[in-house]
Image 1: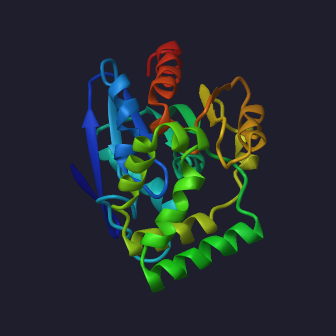
Image 2 (image 1 turned 180 degrees about the horizontal axis):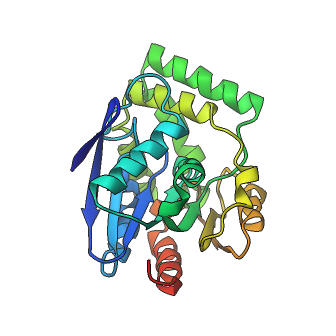
Length: 264
């Protein structure tokens, strides 16, 4: 399915029936990254899986793919599907987007799941690295960049014991376009600090970390500590793509969280 959101066409899939749940994948992948988890939820929930702006089959639009643009896309998706309130789960950049979505559209949020993400903004060095990588991809193409992302995104245990999963993750990344990678990197570099937002979140929240993630555990702990009443789960032997590396564990944690929530 497709919808138009300002200057971009957004592709999304839907599965299951029941209370709505929206799953946002990580960079630089597409909605297929979270399909294994969606499969575990669809027996009880209506699960929506967009390709984020600049990812998969969704266009990047003009200029950086900012968190504001992503949040607007998400609101348009809810409008298109006649969703008043939903539970939103975001992996990595998906989490960055959900902080912005909460700031702008919190009345539409019944609950939140933050997976392998952080609330703090990029350091000056990380910001410069993103901007440099955007330029290099534009100049030299995406292959070298994407090859270099695999050890950062897929945990060491998965790479050693399940090379098939690491290869499948790299294949997902191969759908990334040069304009998409550049726009998304520039958008992430410009994202604001969401640490002050944490104390404003008053809905049921689950925080998921990967034991082997390149995001330090203390960064994920900041989200948990900052959101009153939130729950936290650490997925063992999993990296940044924990939902793809160990979907059974991640899916069970999210399903248990959803099943425990009041109706929405």
